[in-house]
Amino acid sequence: MFVYALVLALMAFSGRQTEPQQSAESTPAPSTAPEAPAEYLGISLAPFLPTPDTIVTRMLELAHLKAAEKLCDIGSGDGRIVIAAAREYHADATGVELDDKLARESEEKIRKLGLSQTARIIHGDMLKQRYSQYDVITVYLLPETNDLIQPILERELKKGARVVAHDFEFRNWRPTTTETIEDDGTGRSHTIFLYQR
Ligand SMILES: C[S@@+](CC[C@H](N)C(=O)[O-])C[C@H]1O[C@@H](n2cnc3c(N)ncnc32)[C@H](O)[C@@H]1O
Image (tube, rainbow, N blue to C red):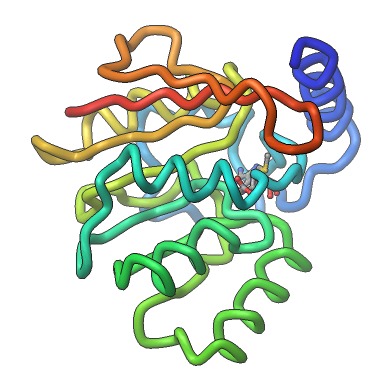
């Protein structure tokens, strides 16, 4: 868990230094949240590392996701949380993903599964989105990334909204539930944090 955290943090740090995918200067940002510092806009704030399917299931169970509720996975990677929410919970699911290839591939997967009515990927920057419509937010991001998204969620989320974080907590919030899965079947342990607005 700690080795993984270190690897994740190092990868994110190197990505921040060398792989900006959009320039904040060249990208108009009409919906940019005022709290997002300009130097963090348009860049990768976390590497892609998928949440194992068993942990996805437990995250959605802990959130008590109901049919027709709106879910957003911030930094949606290959779309697995979005797809599980739409397919297994009949939720209205959205992912936000900056990476071109991941966004394209997950959109394609959604289309092939016939889920386009209830699942979609916003190909864009998590710091430039609106989140006020969502009932459930899921994240698997770094602690510093959670710090950046926290004021945006505090401003945007409605009362009753739930936030589920995998492995890295929101350090300024108190979870209503914390659950550790000691072994995901491959020997890795995971912690899930549930927050309620
Ligand atoms: C650890 S992965 C989590 C993937 C997925 N949520 C899951 O749990 O399987 C983090 C994802 O955040 C995406 N990401 C990083 N910075 C981003 C940004 N500024 N805006 C949107 N997505 C971003 C990465 O490309 C990556 O796919």
